[in-house]
Length: 251
Image (cartoon, rainbow, N blue to C red; front, side):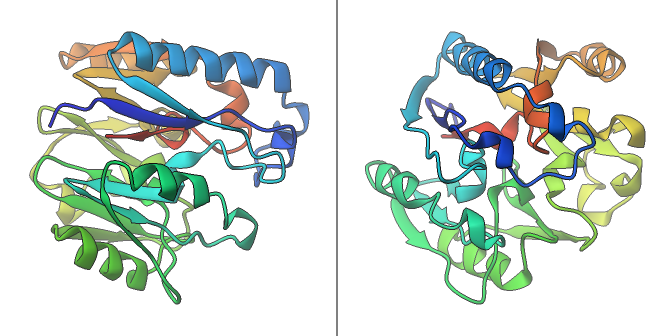
């Protein structure tokens, strides 16, 4: 399905207070983060998407990571229930906006589920069962979206898409830890070294793969496989343990 829109939200004033254990979190540059977000939105627009901008939420430091708030599939959208109490409420405006385009249902307790765990494939989804998504969340999503959802269970990680991502043409970017998982056997794998795992979280728009500039070796691996790659500096989002997919809901 051809994608047309991207929902985004610029970091708010308290973005520095994001949930993060990154060693460079303390030197996060707010001005640079805003410039990087602008470049991100400009790139999506240049690729033909209508970029729908929600207002920042200054009291929700992680609210720019809109991907976690919803999963869109076909004519339906599933509004998530995030694991961290501090993040609940980020989804209110997202839900209202999605109702203009989709039939919408919201996850309910005891489910926890976040969009950063959900990989979209041509025929089905793969969801992580992680620190942020539980099996009840996966079951509720599967029931509402009416789609096959396979699972990769690893309660030691935050989000699956930091380690596994589908980039089109039956190809996945995957770290060594997951390359032999049964869910991924049908795909051609580009195996990313564990020390460069952050490169795995990339965004695919109309055949172009948007990747972090930080890992040129992985960028070359993807180019050599025949993909067009666009590189963006994402340093100030990495410091909040966010990446390219985290910053938008694409549909």
